[in-house]
Length: 369
Image (tube, rainbow, N blue to C red; front, side):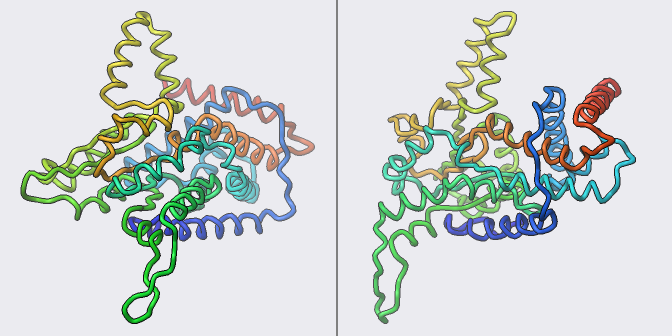
């Protein structure tokens, strides 16, 4: 678990160094192995890649564990490949997969409207919010991929640049002629947090626990900007379990990023419904309740000025800042090409392996009915 439950965004350096270390380790172990780009990824195989990830994430959550890509690689290997494959090849696949995931250029996957509005939003809200946290769950402890992915996106780098420009980091002297914190450093320490971990909900709880009064009528406002609607309820459940009666002094306000993969799918589902007009109206009502945005730029509007003022703001990464449609495409490419690079040889063609994988995927689906 990363040591980054609070503090300024500069603590992300800790997570990045951990990610860099893991990437370097698997890079050294796969030195000299070039991952080739193979053919198109079959839709059934692509679907299986993310069904497996979802399944393992839910299993880890249920058991109080953590999702990681080492377990992912091992499970995929056992489920869709011939059991005769050697343990050495499994390890090669595992290392190549982690290496290739770390190599994905995340700057290509940050929503353009996020980049365009970032500086304006920093200027508008830097002194109005109580705290802003980058809040994300992923594989940090085992492979460091989530922290590496966020570093690669350069969103923190751009955020820090905007803060430093706004706060003008001039050196100040204290009474003993010692250096005091510059304005930007003070802001980052006091008003920002980096919560990228295997379980972001436990981080949310530990961060907010001491900030909720047990007496009086004062309400502490928590604003969560998420792509997954289910996570609003999860956050409330996690806080309630820890805070108990103190929850009466908490107001949780959701902001749903409907430009995400889940938002796109929800719109498509409503349009394909047997009664599309009713389904679209229900979705519209849900969007109203969730203070939905269709672009990060909308946060500059008057409605959100009231919502975000004096709030602890938690901003998810995948689907809110990073485009989780195009990210999945790059991730699938990394998985597929790493796998095929490992197993294709003179006796096993890509087409043969692909067909065997599809047969096993279909067999698993049948047996689960």
